Length: 249
Image 1: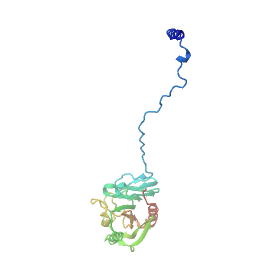
Image 2: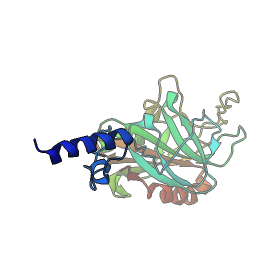
Image 3: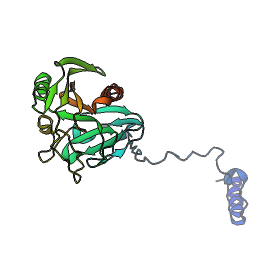
Image 4: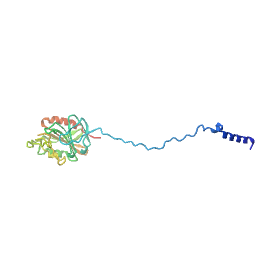
């Protein structure tokens, strides 16, 4: 080892002891290696979507005075097992009693406050429309007004028949059950309701129209019922509702 090397080592030791190392030996590298900034993996958030129906629902109401209905588009009650919607205008009342399998829209008031004009919807799982209407037309409580004819409403095909209720002057009514006097009992329709439920016309000597439509895999039986003097006007009002029927998407 030469003298320069010895002196260089001694000089370096002195500088270390005094804290005076050359800048080239104390500076951080100009471009230090970058630390990884990749975040730790996280679980993807789970998104939950709630699809809200754009249709209103009919409230539950017991027979027989019903409750008011606001104008709008409604789904038929779920217990009917038929995915239909319809539009209801002003001045209708509704009776939605699933326990009796009764759903109807009504107008007017009897002396017992129940509707005197009725638009009734009844679901039937299966059957032949002509046979169903023939049994109704031939009921001893009714008078046929014509033959059974084809009908198409809101794109649904089926059949219809018109009848009138025979007078029933001996029936005094039942205020507790809100059944007005003079109405006619309808056993041919009653069988589609809960067995303990009794079905009658809405007024004495009513005019009625019965319609059976093919809807999906089942049948929809419709009853239009009103006093004779009001029947044609009420039938037109009912048809405006029926023409809005459509299958729910």
